[in-house]
Image 1: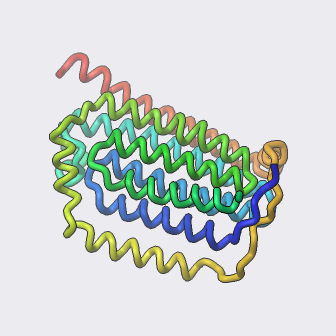
Image 2: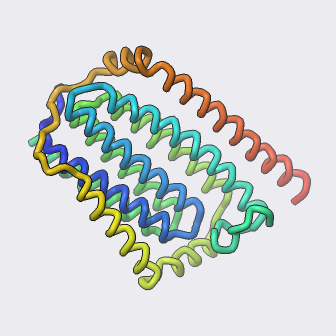
Image 3: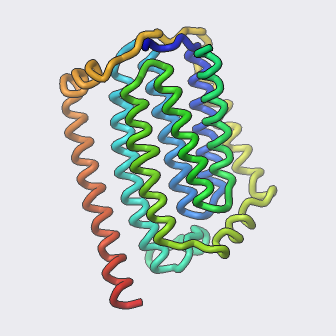
Length: 104
Length: 170
């Protein structure tokens, strides 16, 4: 099956909206699990913009950058969730307003 | 027909993301986030990137979200955390983040070119992606593997201390 002919701006507007939603969530939430989820949304929006740009010129480069973003997201989330476990053990909470010092 | 499918998936992705980031319960938010990632995978497939769509489902909606599920189940957040989150979602807390996110969106809209160009309509097969990946981009693949190794070592270090200490001390 071939691709679909879509105005590139529409995909870019969607990526910008998703990125803004992730940014809003990152500032709004205080639970670190939700902050990590917002980071995932922002990375995914950036990946969407790259894949759309790759589809615009019919080249594979967009999908390759998507792969690299995927590797960054996986590494970031594994270390981030390890930190979540440490924070829960030390502070007995996931609220970042009470746990804003790493040397509790 | 296919265009309608595309815009439908776009609306689903956006609304599921908004729902995910406004839930108080972490498990519910996670389910909405998985829905949003699956909708983005449909977008990738329709734009002619089947390899990226498969990876989005396998790695994002599969592996990374399962990591989140494991951590949420291990922490056993309970009702108190949910109440705290609900109190943090008051309307007055939305004002400044809302203004800043809107400003960011307006700025991004200025960056988008108004050239009304269409996407090419040709699908890029996994074979082409693989040839590019291990041709000109082979250094980036090596760097990504080093990054994943660093993430593995870091996660093992942090998680091992968690398991040992909680077994002996607490």
